[in-house]
Image 1: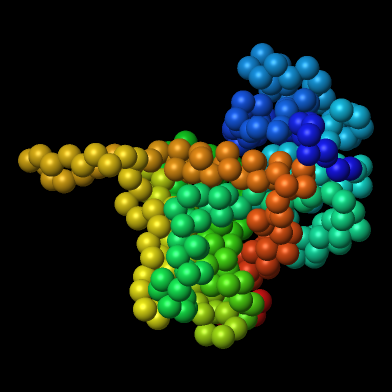
Image 2 (image 1 turned 90 degrees about the horizontal axis):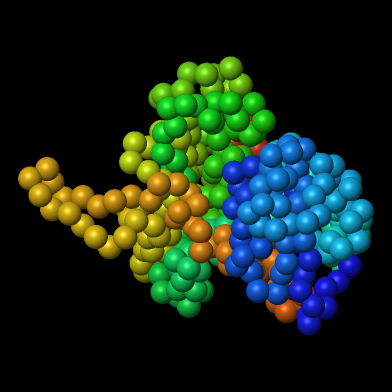
Length: 343
């Protein structure tokens, strides 16, 4: 199914939890060329939220019913990770464009199966949400690298850092998240590949520790993970993921080249205000990933809509998502084995 460049892209959203509601608001209220025409959730209160807050009239409690809705051109899938691949395949086979929250899947074979279905349905757009690619600072850094500002990039140091949640949300989520590398570091893996020119990963090593959330041990996860990824040609990535920051959210990346270095997001600044008093020098930090990247989430959906309408090519492919999963799966295996693992 292709969308006319003159008609609004009619989007149905599946999943109305924390991230689903944010995506729904972006589609309904902030994306030119798109309309949120349907919403799907098994929870009646979430469907009622979509009706009350966003005026969505077509409400479904079953994903199959959403796909059968003739007024839906595209679906945004913001459901639990374990459902992503199967729902993406079903949507493509139903003739819908697909926007899918990361990760594509928790294993490489499933990623490749989704990619094969997408290739067989080439008229549909399929995109995975690697949101940092749409952040203004990351886009500027990539443009500087492509222009030769730091020479040849050969090392990326990147981290995903979430503020500690004493209530243990991530402990409850861990059994289905795939672990800290698939849930968090997959963003840093994608950034590293993007900034380094998409080299092929050859081997990885990962380690980690549980600093504050012992319940993670039950599913072999950690709340602080570290990793090294080696690529063909000599490039390297050093990754850090933490769920225990005391001050807020801090997603940062550093790209080191032969003639210079670029840093993105260092300091977690909420604004440009700095306070100096007897207690020291400090600034306010962003609270969570959405506050840090809310403009990028807007731009991400806008790019998906533009691709569906035939106005521009996709910025992120399923091949990118598959490679990120391939590396993250190898890191998870390394964390558990304590050994260097091939990719």
